[in-house]
Image (cartoon, rainbow, N blue to C red; front, side, top):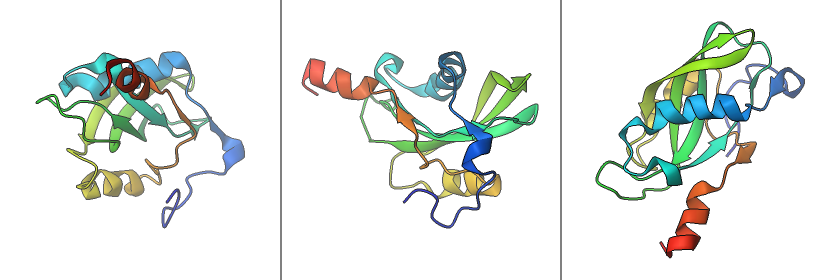
Amino acid sequence: MSGVGIPARSNDSEQRRLTDAEKAVVRRSVLVGTSDPDFAEFRWPTMSKSPAPTDYYCGQVNAQTAPGRWVGFRPFVVTIETVKGEIRNATLVDLSADRVETTSVISKCREHGLDAFATVESDGRAAEAQRRFGL
């Protein structure tokens, strides 16, 4: 599913993984409307080594919805503000309500040459919570 029909923004040698600090910035912006953000799990695609000062980033999150239901991984898109190539601020643009109705978010990602499903790493938080609490 990764990269299907989505134009590459840049080749792999021009991509990098997000730092833990950058992930924290994105995580805060995406988890605004979730019930229990501590147990959210993200799938993190790479980003450009030289992002624009204001750019877009797409990924996936598995977090409880406001009513407290787990709906599985769903794509999100955020705008990011960078300083010297590092993410300093992120604002949620769109988050799929569930993992079925994803068209709007996927379209926004594609408009910017991004793929929310091009996962490079996962932080495994939800899986650990589910094991720990028998969810």
